[in-house]
Image 1 (cartoon, rainbow, N blue to C red):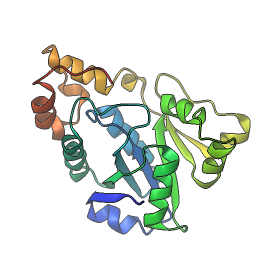
Image 2 (cartoon, rainbow, N blue to C red; image 1 turned 135 degrees about the vertical axis):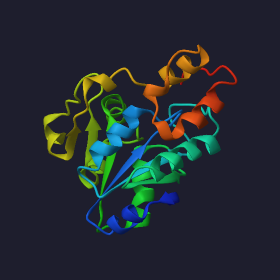
Image 3 (cartoon, rainbow, N blue to C red; image 1 turned 90 degrees about the vertical axis):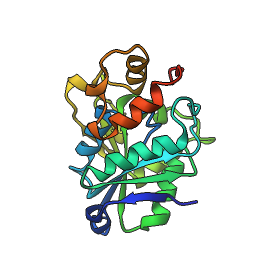
Image 4 (tube, rainbow, N blue to C red; image 1 turned 180 degrees about the vertical axis):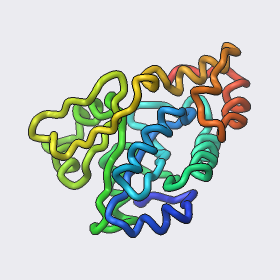
Length: 213
């Protein structure tokens, strides 16, 4: 298995020969301004940030926008932002996505895994089938964790491999669920979504009720 790229900016393609690439997986239902802020923050560490849409979600179902629409929103977002690429993955776990990324870039490029505080706490406690898997992953791939309603506090033995991404508190309440609810209730929502995907989001989520995922 390997990542399948659907968009590579010229800048990102050139930069990917550098030492660091960051991978930001998500459900993207839809992408929000908080997602974009996290990606921009990760570009302070990496030469390229890959927005990854998994084909399988370990803790979510594919409700709301279909796979093709989510991919279209990511492509529109990346086309407007330097340093962002878009790829799909076969696996849904961070460990699986990391392996697919290594298949593309090889062992000489440092690959960081990007997530928010809530996701960091979830993947730390995930049952990988045997003890020590998370720390093995962390030894290979640093974890870039965005502050979301608080900072992630890793165990002392993991702290050196966890890189904090500091976001303003104004992003704490921004979520894809909030966007979908606002669209359905005909409330203001555009400020929560990057301008480049307003039209796609309005068409997709304005038609039928969406269950919160």
